[in-house]
Image (cartoon, rainbow, N blue to C red; front, side):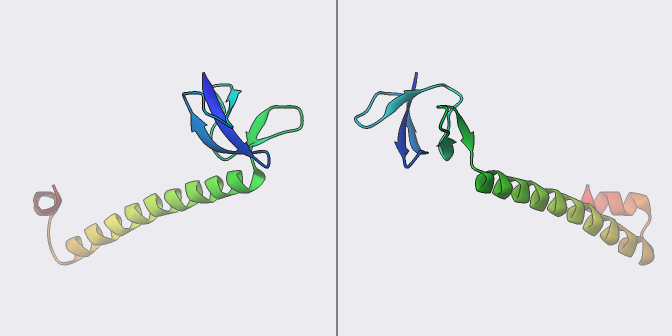
Length: 91
């Protein structure tokens, strides 16, 4: 069983023990979800947009790390290091 503190139709806190002011909710309800008029819960459009932006930023960071690594390898090769020497440096 889960219990939620709901303020202005937004789940503020979750508890696994009953507390004053908390209502029983399904196990698939989490903090920051919005209670809809039909009684179901979902994340707000704003929250979902923030999550999507976070995912995009993480993917961009991974792609930049790959680009940076390849750039570093190219520069080491341009300095005359061979693949074995580069591998011994970076592991």
